[in-house]
Image 1 (tube, helix red, strand yellow):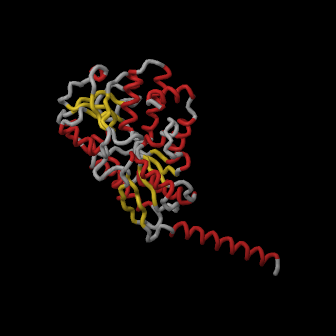
Image 2: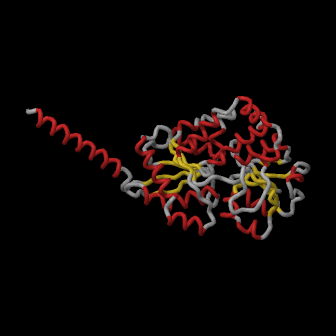
Image 3: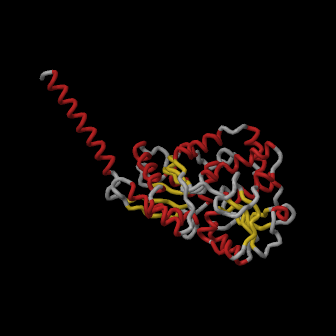
Amino acid sequence: MSFIFRTALIAALGLTVGAAQAQTTDDFYKGKQISMLVYSGAGSTYDIYGRLLAHHMSEHIPGKPTIILQYMVGAGGLKEVDYLSRIAVRDGTVFGTIGRGLAFERLLGQDNHFDPLQFTWIGSMNRENTIALSWRTSPVKTFDDLQKTELLVPGTGVGADSEIMPRAYNNLAGTKFKIISGYRDTSEAGLQLETGELGGLAYWSWSAITASHPDWIRDNKINLLFQTGADPIPGGPKIASIRDKVADPVAHQALELLLARETMGRPFLAPPGLPPERAKILRDAFAATMRDPAFIEEAARGNIEVSLVTGEEVDTVLKNAINAPPEVVNRLKKALDR
């Protein structure tokens, strides 16, 4: 066999293998079904965001697979994390959304066997702006009132933001939230707020209120106590930030570390060990969906706030948090009674 013939044959084989690999990548999802797990119940804000994403994302995945939602409620999202970690297939046909705070629990000393850096972060659907509020009949109507009078708020799980955040606020900013544990999710808590069983909510996203309960704002049913952002809520009312209520430098840094999770407003993640090419497909499809005019239009119709946070940005947020100064981490652990 001549040198020229062998070279040509090797080149042809290389092209054939490359084409086969490309074909495999392009065709993997064709005719398949993707399961999108949601850690909170039907009607919750995470469900609303998940449905919106599922409606459009398949158009941006090669092969256009069907995406279905599956609810995996329990332990503030740890049930879903455990499933993704130990049971779910690792081929890109299963991913889910969890509460943003779970990714920080290991940093804060919670032994929940969840190492966030091992998972494949696909991205987040928004950068969160959160508020604390009381019902209009509550005697707590301002931040100053909240430092003097107890306010009953719901808890949805030991690792959930609904319990972590008010506990930290109490210790870092002198608030008087009283956590009532045992609520299934924030959707149920919102209903109980309206019945008078609860006095307020310590940590609810502005996007959740505008999407699920726009009448609360329109009809002045709630008192806005504070917000958590460094900047005003885009397009929202002017509310003082709790960041400005903490004067001690280390306590202030601890609060900043706690609130770093808000960059990951509505995060989506896939199991550890996902093949790199599948991770890229999902990340690219997620980003393309967030820029899709049809997606943006549907979000606007539903008053759903969206802004792209890439999977790479989520990775950076988590790595920066893990590298926080020890004295800041310890102050935050103390604030959380850990």
